[in-house]
Length: 491
Image (cartoon, rainbow, N blue to C red; front, side, top):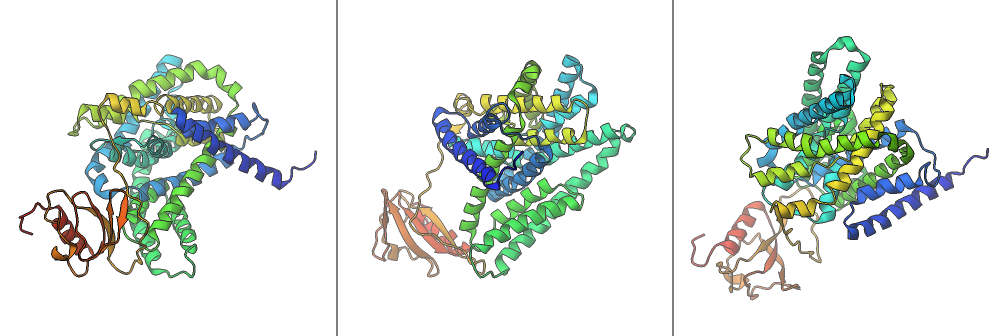
């Protein structure tokens, strides 16, 4: 049999990526999540479709792990800590207690309803216990869905923070299956070890990464993208080698880096956003290739029952119990319960039993894949309707695209910030020169009625103007007070 040239494989990859993006564009208009279409393209190209033979679970697991590393890092970079800080306790409760409750409910269901042995039942529960960061981030972006209150930051923090718990449960149960004499209490110290080391390394290495980004002077701007990749891989893999949770560490490091100023921040954030999307597409295509649709049919009834229990019982129960003491309206809790999307993480975790040779591993993989399909199709397509029904939907803030950009050097504390002139404020109807702004504050541009004005001292501001200001933190506070305070107020 003639060996297939490398160019043929590259052509197949390129065509699949291109088809996936074109199909996702069409799916967006029809209200179908892109992640579901990526899986569908992979399945159509697989052995039961176009005939591409791919059953390399080890490669799929490695690719999934790499992809999750960069997806979680990007999730951390995009996390606004000022918005997230108030929901940290609730997010941690969902990421630990919530995951455990979900796993327990699913384990009890498949044990009593379908006769699964307890360890196999707990293994299935652990695999599907966490929401998926890539699914949550991408579907919310696709839907351009604004959510009231603390719903959005809580969902983002939970989806980025609950993967370590699900990974630990999966690995721990597989360890129990391989060593029955170990006992449940034998894996508890491992949990605390992984979480503590992961949190510590995430904080320390995140700050170290920030220092390196601002101090290491590279010859070309493009090299900073390579540097950020190297730092992310080092944090993730270094933590795992040290016995900690690399998933937790890379997310914490991303939050630390993303909420600080560093050189070429705008271009690096854009780079990691694109890389995250590439990882999501590649991961879902690969996982779609792994599945033979004909093998899903024998377990379809069992898998559908599991999916419905997960969506309508396990997830809501875990959310309401985890947030029982939280001062949060019921409609917001209900929205959190509905946005419990399962995605690539459960499918990647389902490869662990296959590689470990666990009992019922093939059946578990097919069930998990079916659950993911059901979750993305059912929950992903109804987010907007449910948000409207629960009255938690709100319009996303309009972001003005200015024709100029500012790249911090990392060696000063100046920031370029957009400040709105509030109608009726002291600045409304006043010339810039009469406002007595700090000398260190530079008014760069004014956005008014869809047009951009170059400011001069005699330029008169009006309520509703958006003013682009470059200044230090203290000067910015003074500028904001003058543009926000009502006329006649003492600054």
